[in-house]
Length: 304
Length: 243
Image 1 (tube, rainbow over the protein chains, first blue to last red):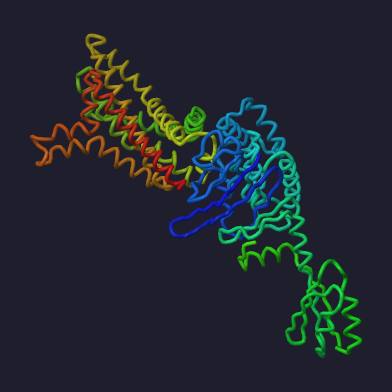
Image 2: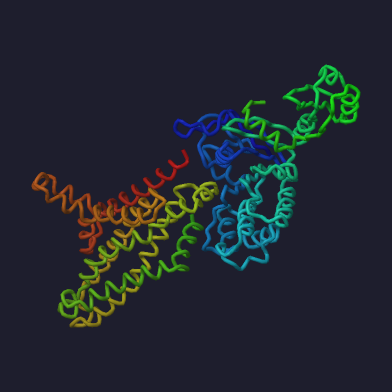
């Protein structure tokens, strides 16, 4: 089972919400990252068959997502952004309703199973409107998996959870990812690091990164820098000649040194500065994290 | 579609709206038929239910939009429409399921009025002296009229996420379809030439015809076509939101 997007484009009037997005996602958790308004939800809506693409195509398990048929919709579980729910219904009543719409055969047994799976047992006697945000989100999750779909699309599923609940829900999503195609959108970086085997970054409707999580972490490693503040700036070529040192940028008395690989370069730099009498005032290692990578990518908007 | 029907129908009965609609309907009809001296059938001295069938469409004109106004407007407002449209049901199934639930509630409101039939039947002199055939026809006509109103109401509810807009539009459209064409037919341009045709576009003419106890194919076709057209239009409007 996989989802395949090819040259997917969506225009709302003049505005291009999604432009030429293409990727293939198989079993496992794929993170879909981007700033607000980048086109994450629009892309997800096209995968679920809610929106008609302006151009390009989406297939789910080889079947086109548009025009959407009941058969292809049955393959997909969907938790929309903002988690819409019928607040006047009781938890079980609502899940039974969606299970019936999905054509689940043993409705009651399956609903009980899902309630336990998402940890709703304690709150099951309440109306959805009475639940806290975190529990509502669980109802939304339960709704998305009640028919045991091979593809699960979760639009910002971890909104509204406290840290304890968050760990629980992440475990659930990870378990789903063992057997299902899970596409999860978020703008929380730790989430991606904790959950995803692969990360797609979208900005202004375009895909700007599509990497396995390890590759992305390598990128992070590649972006380690050392900054030093000196009294007198000497011959920078000596600095560039040091082992493990990359590009050196100068900004007045402040020098920014790119680090190649994982080598520890600080002792060598300190030694050089002392030998040459630069008067070292400050020496600091800066590790770019995923957040910086994300910001860099989405600010420059360079397709990768 | 069955699930959607039951979900809608039970929402009426688990909330206030269902009982309110039925209650208001019965109170208004009860007042007109037995209390208000101008229309009371006790003063009228005829064993008939004509008042019921004259007044009921007007009551429906306000009550049915109140039933239907939430059907799709609320789904839109709560954004659950997105969820519904990604479930394995088709848009026509959604629309028809909701329409049938509204129609069933309207029909349910009519059931207690059978007591009026029994009352008049017992009060008649001699007992049972009333035209049961015409009354059966009138009930059928009223059901058909409620069907069209429901279809109009569901359609009006698709147009906006604001329920009040849905209500006002539905009441207006119901009025136009119920009486508007009748009034239009009296315009000098139509009189003597097309007035009959214009009248036939409205519900009134067909309702009268069925109320005489005469079920003619053309009337049945009329009711089915008008209701069907509004339901089809609802499907078109909903599908347009997916563009």
